[in-house]
Image 1 (spheres, rainbow, N blue to C red):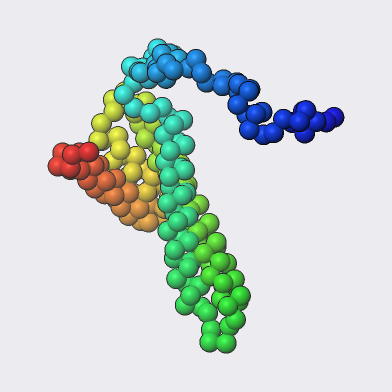
Image 2: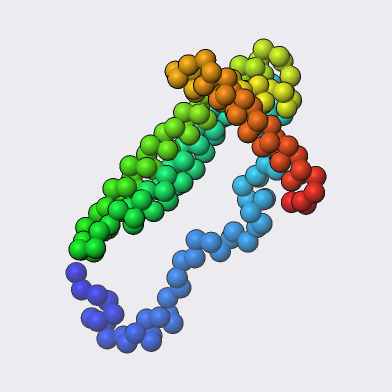
Length: 189
């Protein structure tokens, strides 16, 4: 097929001025809110969900496990990076040094990420169970969930380790909740 610009004898200037290009957006000069009728309030599948002022147990489980794994993996990768740099020897080539660093970062990142992800998983499950049992959502639930998570995480090492782990878990969660309240009160966001 022959191009009409070449066969008709018209030059490019005549071709561009004699045709009108189609603009599909010509009639869409409306604001986006009117065009799509977007809602401004949150939408819920079931009416009972709109009454709750907290995340569901599934959202909590996903949030705490994912956040724990990601933060643990980042921290572990940093720790592994330092270990890899320290493990490099004098005669190592650049390729070997990079390999050591990557191997150490991956190993530590997976190890610590999995541990903290499991802790997040246990915390979310225990907290959701306590909220369901007590039928209230307050600071006591979080502290009890931290206590139970620490005790359950260290239970395989014995009763004494479980008690120490539970105390540490309860203290860490209590400090986190208190810190959150301080930040809410004194730092305007």
